[in-house]
Amino acid sequence: KAEAEKLQPKEAAEGTVKVAKSMIRELVEKAAAVKDSKGKREVLDKVVLLATNSQSLTNTITPDVEAGTPVYEGSLRYKTVEALFDVYLDNCVDDMQETTTAMFGSLMSGQEAPQMSMEQMEARAADAEKAQ
Image (cartoon, rainbow, N blue to C red; front, side, top):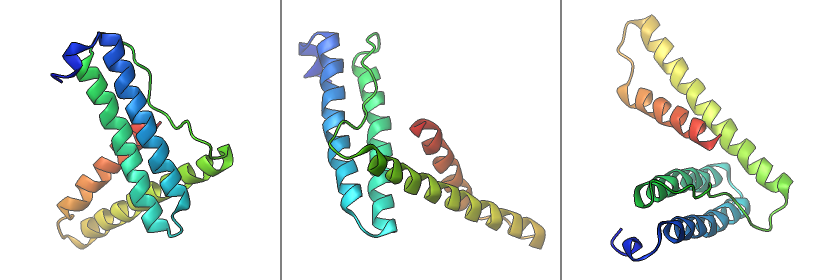
C-alpha cells in the first residue's frame, strides 16, 4: 500500500488490474495444460481466489476509483476457456451435492453433520457467486 501511495489513484488501480490480468492469464493457460481433473480444479480454484483478492486489493488501495474487473485476456480459444469454466462449475456442483448428501444422511441417522463440510459448502457457494 505504501508503494501505491506514490501513484495517482487511477494509475494504482490500473496497475493492480494489469498485474491480476497477467497472473490470471498464466493460471488459466496452466489449467488448460493440466490433464487430470483434480489438478485442473486446483489451478482453477487459484484463478477464482486471485480474481477475488485482486478486486479486494484494488478496492482497498483505491476505494474511489472504478478499475474494472480482472479477466482472462490470453490466446486460448473461447471454447477452451468455456470448457475450463464447465469443469470448475461441475466440480463445485459435485462438492455441494456430496456435502448436502452427507448432511442429510447425518440428519436421518441422528448424527451431527460434519462442521468442515458445511464450511466447505459455504466457501464453494461464495466462490461460485463471485465467479459469476
